Length: 258
Image (cartoon, rainbow, N blue to C red; front, side, top):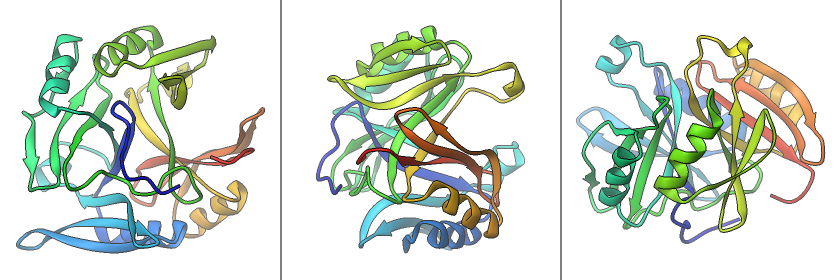
């Protein structure tokens, strides 16, 4: 659906930092049918706005050489909408997380910072001005769900509850839904022993019309399958993929309209 504003405390923007920007643009354009609007941000650098029907849905950028040298892998960064980036940054630090930079203005688009929760999972904070974030969500080939992989769901729930007012619906010991104002929009996956060595992290889900077909298409474009297509009872069919540069994301065919 098309949106004109994101509710504070919900995910609003989805940004891929990659080791090969051109290859990533080619991959996601082919996979999801996105078009590309390259916005100059330096002498020889661009911020690639990925669009559907001419509206922004995500972005890609090249990881800096110093990031690559430090071993930062290609990854998706999820941004949370806030009324005030400065106040949100204070809340992060007060709740035991840390901001990786002071809040700063992105031209006239908005104000942002990047933060980590106490376990080290990284996320963005976005105070919209002229750029609200994604203009289409919750339909095929757009973002529909944010997921935190964590080793301590209780601690994560407490942190994000203090910072963003999230409520976490428990029940399944391995998975908890994240709610805001009674609406689910994300989840927390408790990491298993098989995920030893993988740091806690956020990742996006993109809605699709056919999970199995998209997995085969992604593989033909050079992606790897981390979790093959499988059903979630009463929810839908999903898979976890790594793009050709290694950034991990999920796709899901929902049993009901997103």
